[in-house]
Image 1: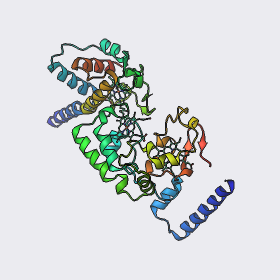
Image 2: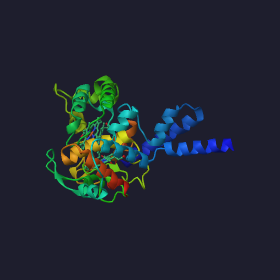
Image 3: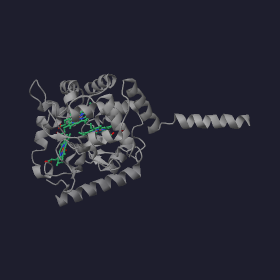
Image 4: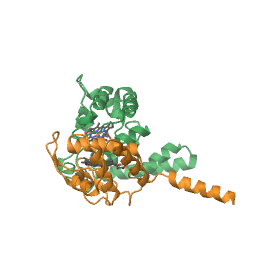
Length: 134
Length: 187
């Protein structure tokens, strides 16, 4: 009996510790809240996803969808190089949103590239809500 | 050309028979034979995992032996504006990857392509692009623009691995070229 409950505890612990996008996203959201953001919205994230900016570097029009498309369950291509990009939706690609360092690195690169500046904590949280909803 | 191919097959066949009979082939020779690789690699393979991961996400992870140290140092110092894209790294990766690239750059390599690239660069300001080194330009001068620039499966000469089927192995022999939608290169 005692053995069983230990086993159950181990199983629960292992389940909780396994890398899952839900845990990673939640942790990131907690971090953004600590910076003063009140609430996050998938709808705002969606709107921002297709918002077009004019790149100061290349003069071209660019949005998140330029490389990731608007169907996050599909593989896509980097608009300049044509390199394959695996689907961003964690529901079909469990490797997505599973490593906070990786997520922040690409937010850093992609926000500067697309918006011409870093994304705010609010914007990053909205994007995560949008991506997770797929 | 046909005759040359027949000769190659005959030669390879003979070597294989000899190899099987005498077991004179090393594992490495056999691997090259299976992949259709001819001769040794033109540059050393890119084997640093951090490099391949960080610098291989938007394009082919170019072997460090394709550019001199000076080019790599300059390129690594400007990742915020990297040929129009943003490729910034975490500070620790920035340092380890710069060290890896400069320790294995063209000026420090003995492989064929690395030596030829170094010889071809005559200015004190080497280009940041492999595709702008004189050796590269010379080797690719006969390929019509329409086979890459107007070919959506290739896009530009910067995407080595789309034509050179053994690019990842560091082998760029002209007989191992297969241009997407076009086919093998015969000159």
